[in-house]
Amino acid sequence: MVTDIAAGYGGVRSGDRAALRYDGMSRLKPNFVAWAGDSPVPPATGTPALATVVTLPGYNHVDTIRAALTQNDGQPDHSAWQLALFLRSLR
Image 1 (cartoon, rainbow, N blue to C red):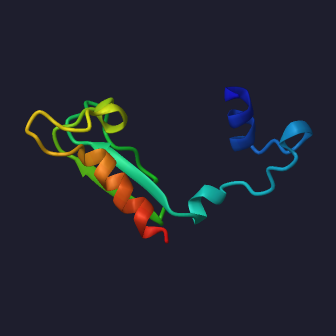
Image 2: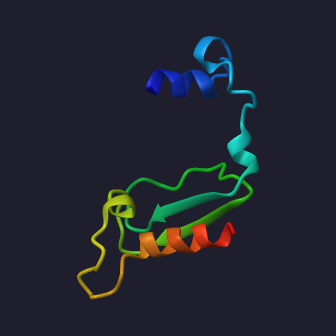
Image 3: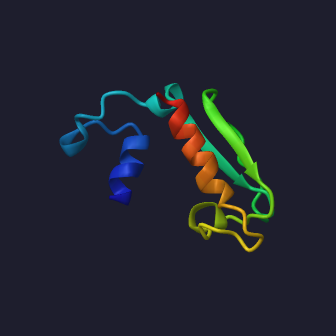
């Protein structure tokens, strides 16, 4: 699967990947990007123009996808909340 993804991004359109017609289509569709505010990894550049970008203060890179539903301070998980808001905006 990783090989297929790399080949698709690399522009390969033969064999099983013949149905991948358009290169870079994800740049033309809505994207959701959640940056972890306390991560040692700096945010990447080149975010798609249509991306909804949020920064989650107090989160590290793992927390953005695996945080507890209810945080230690009793608040809901902000990453899930932001993702839900993004999905709701796609109607």
